[in-house]
Image (cartoon, rainbow, N blue to C red; front, side, top):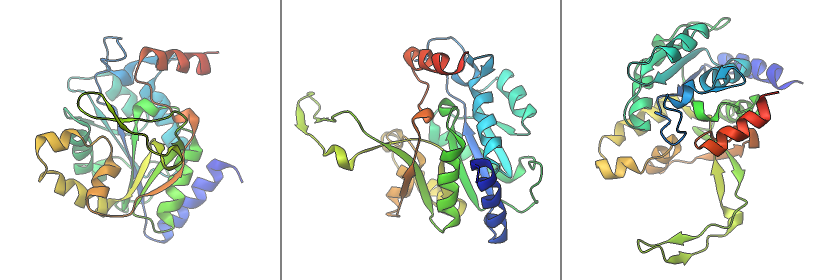
Length: 254
């Protein structure tokens, strides 16, 4: 069975069990580390913006009943990309958590994707536009675990580097066992009610604590809830630096 066929069947199963998927794509980053002078999601590889690559992957997965994309304030280019894919564009915030909060608030206002019912979303996948080459298998693995009853699911890959922990003086304090470490990717999947609860608790954190929240799974962890890992994929690397962009161009500009 092909991956696309699998996910179409998964979506039908989810509908039968009252689990309806929506997808949030976080694309509000300024791209300052990329150094192109435009929002990161508007940078092109092989004639397509990173956001277009990301949305093509979301649609190919075949599970998204609604899609919401967070974009920078004042943006017009990315909003036009969203419109072509039937996605709702919403202005993102200064932080990732602010952007996701904005998207969650309008999740069920997004246009319905073709072939889906009007049932409100009960599960949500949060995806980074910067991980725009994530394959369908990444969506498949997360969706399958959510359908099976998990409340929080993240795709991961093994860590190949040796990792050191250091103190404020940059002195090594330890070497975690590499076998116990994983690099986290997106899309990350959640039971919608669970993620909303996690974000409601975010307001109780200090600004300093909120700054340390680098992905949505961290909020679930603060609730003391189980977060399941599933297999990610090397193609879901994050385009952050000029070197990452060179890699993307080498892989996809033929």
